[in-house]
Amino acid sequence: MKFLAAAPKAIREAAEIIRDGGLVAFPTETVYGLGADALSSRAVAKIFEVKNRPFFDPIIVHVESLEALEKLTCISGTQDSILHAKVKKLAEKFWPGPLTLVLPKKEIVPDIVTAGLSTVAIRMPSHPVALRLIAEAGRPIAAPSANPFGNLSPTTAEHVRNQIGGEIDMILDGGPCPVGIESTVLDLSSPEPVVLRPGGLPIEAIEKLLGKVEIASDAGSSRPRAPGLLTRHYSPRTPLVILGKRVTPRREENAGLLAFQAPIEGPFRKVEILSDRGDLREAAARFFACLHELDKAGLAIIYAEPVPEIGLGQAIMNRLRKAAGS
Ligand code: TXA
Ligand code: MG
Image 1: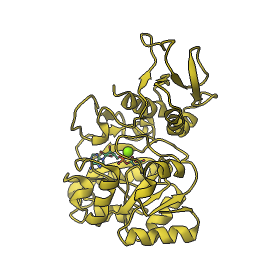
Image 2: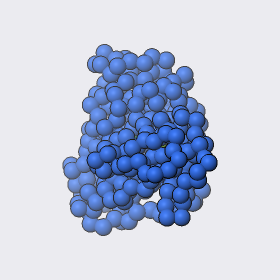
Image 3: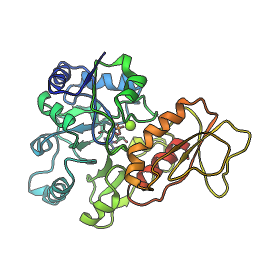
Image 4: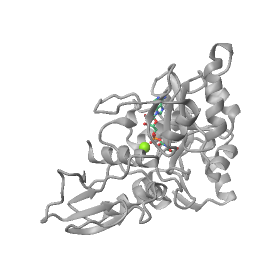
């Protein structure tokens, strides 16, 4: 496995690996992705193998132009003019950026990418390394987060190396991911838009453009609409519990704390603070890195303080609940 700083020459080499059907982990503004040629079933199959990902969980396709979007999805034509207008509005405002759109797919998208669904999830990432890699590869790149299925997402190249480094062809190191939480997934394939996963683009921003949108209830189904909505997900190996009125740390435990703004009283052996300024953007950017640190510390339990559920706080609380399996 090659571990290279994301300089132009390394990106060109990575693009070649993608074109040859290999796997490259690369930075996006949200989390590191594990990329393969989205139009090659064989290449995408390797992603599932390395991640140990169930085949019913579809993968996001990353593009660097709106022309690519037209090639992969059915959004044009008079019949779909309303959809086309919606997509155009969203893409103009939020792309490139942490928004994924679920749209009716064209035949060219292999079934393995979409888990046999008639829709495909597309996003245009804003990270310059990701954009350049897609452009140099000359094809769309299918990429889930570069971690084993269900584990904590990687927000640094080191996180990727530690989790799956031995099983892939290259890691492009572009430093820590600035947003730190996966993209917001918005389903536009039915008449009313539905948020399938809160993420790096606050739902309030989408609602400013489209009006009130529905948020899919992600309670407990074993085959939800976006399989990333499985109850236990984004999990550290250490058990995690969210603090609340009825949940307080027990004294004898070998416990760690994920605090929002400041440490709270308690018998904690290790404490990570998301943002001492109480800034939800900073908290999101640090979220997975803090959990990776706590998970490495050999604790018996991690207590997590809830964060305010506005803006990016919604995505953080969504991840925390998944990590807690609740
Ligand atoms: O920020 C991100 O979205 C990152 C970076 C690498 O782009 N990617 C990411 O991928 O988080 P992944 O595979 O970890 O999560 C993709 C989510 C899953 O919950 C999946 O079920 C959902 O998107 N998804 C993908 N295609 C879908 C489709 N056609 N319909 C409904 N949900 C879909
Ligand atoms: Mg993931």
